[in-house]
Image (cartoon, rainbow, N blue to C red):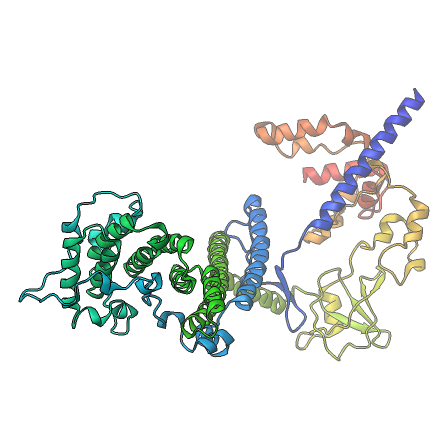
Length: 607
């Protein structure tokens, strides 16, 4: 049984230590709120605009939420400041990136002009002479010309709704009736595709091609010559119709002539992807790699496929080193590629900055909402200022009315003796630099204090002060309560720690703790004059006990009656009777024997 009790006690002890550890860890993690400040003259007072000055200071829940909101706002403010600094440090403010790139990049310098200023629609074609074909052999250049010249209409020559060789699955060919093209420059190479030996003008050449097609409607050479004619006239729809028929009748090894012609037309009509397919098909059968790679380089440059474009230009330069058109376009493509990479990096940086600004704005809006919530429960600043003014005014009035006691120097100005254990108003200064102790009351101990400065009233001597404030009837020192000798403790205000440990190694029980009674003189009542009147002193004072119930009919007061009944049934009150300390306090007012105390109080009650 004893072991079980010891185990239970040990368990309770461990549980108490655990709770204490949890409580202390909570205290270590708590944060204080700056509600108090120290003024220039050393005075501690609350801030005027403190967030803890609440409209309803009695509301504990609002107070706790206010402090939590304040701590959250402080952390959020730190986060916003750090985020703003980060955004400003990483913001890309390079507004002259493009101009500086064109001036400093080596490829841009070699290209001389940006890629956008170069003609990527530079026309190309494969001459029939490269196939060992002479156009004069297919056209009668000596036939007389009529007054009205005809044009070669390939659709009238032959109706061809579909051909497996004509790439009619491409969108550009399917929409050929709507094709448009920019105006050809006079330097376009297509104007030299047809020899002037075929006629003195383009119109004459067109008439002779039409006459030849009327005689031979299946000639792939004549259809290719007709497509050249319509390219010079800048009629893309007619070019496509003639090329379709040229592809239908051309042998495989000669299809590259029509394919290259059609690719140029679709490229100029902004169907560059379709044009790239046609050029790749021409490379499968063509021997003119220079024209094919150069044309494909222009098409890929227009499509933004810069790596493919550079490869095509390199192939053209391998075939013809120093080819000026391919070399300039290659450097221009490289220049543009690096510029776009820089611009994309700048765009990503700006986009990241934009996202960070949006997040910052969101956090800032949240900060404003929390600030409004904080201000909602806080007292207005004007009202708080008014409260402070009222408080300072009241403190000034109390000082003028003498609510604070006056003190005097003793022991060569080393001790400041104060008559009562009441507040002492003092300020810092050189006047009391030599003061080492402040003593309260005649029988109280002294304590080391800071230098103080007393403020004496006008025309008041120490004799006047003693008459106005007589000595206290009882000692206020804690040593009197604990039963210690004052002579051994004349330089301290409280008992020493070693004495406390020696006298009370453990905390006394509640029943063993001394009780303390406030003297009635504190409220201006003279107990001896009330109890020991002249009439009472002449009579026999023995026998009766005081009956407090005769003073007031508490039975008519239900609340008072219930309170008395509860006190009567409280065992703790009965166990503390008689109270030694209460007896000492009572006998300090009377000089009679114990048996007479009850009679004296009873007669005083009757009186």
